[in-house]
Image (tube, rainbow over all chains, first blue to last red; front, side):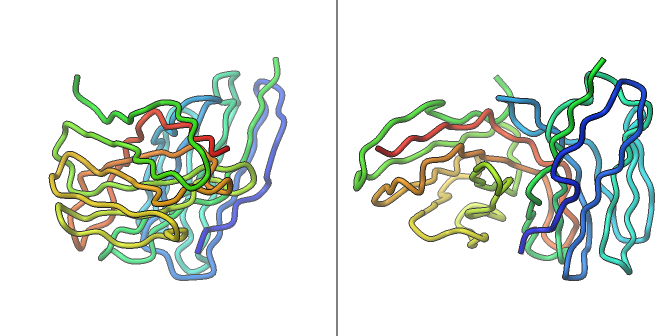
Amino acid sequence: QQPVQSPQAVILREGEDAVINCSSSKALYSVHWYRQKHGEAPVFLMILLKGGEQKGHEKISASFNEKKQQSSLYLTASQLSYSGTYFCGTERGAAGNKLTFGGGTRVLVKP
Amino acid sequence: DAGITQSPRYKITETGRQVTLMCHQTWSHSYMFWYRQDLGHGLRLIYYSAAADITDKGEVPDGYVVSRSKTENFPLTLESATRSQTSVYFCASSESRWGEANTEAFFGQGTRLTVV
């Protein structure tokens, strides 16, 4: 079952912040975040394991709330290069490694 | 070249024909995945493989067949192509180990398949 992402799209001005949410109806073992530029393959940003840890990649950070089965990606002081589609991927259990992605959030950062 | 490559990059086929999409990785990663990407659906998992000769269904396996006789190759076959299988197909691999969380997945450049 695919995780649900929100919002579906967001438009930002350079320097603004945004939050992308990812939620699942099932217990999660880990959450991945990827970014895809138009016409290209998805590229890895970070992985969060259950335990509520936060991670960062440049000025992009994420959190994972295991109890709420949710993860959030924070785009801080957005740059033009942050434009693209962001996908969260989830695993429900360590065994099996079935990595399932959400529908994606399209982000457009304008000058 | 090291990495993960898909072939062909573009393919047009007719309804009812069998078509095979190839995926090759040079890292000896244990796990490999096939996804299809359609507008409004994100990336949907078709099949995945934990190792050579071990494969399992994902969310949308109907109409597809996979095999993995060698660690580095993971071909995806559409047995009898339908228009609904028109999509962009991505192959991915990761060095995850059974019983552990997935590590970073590396994606191929994709195959754009059109079924007419």
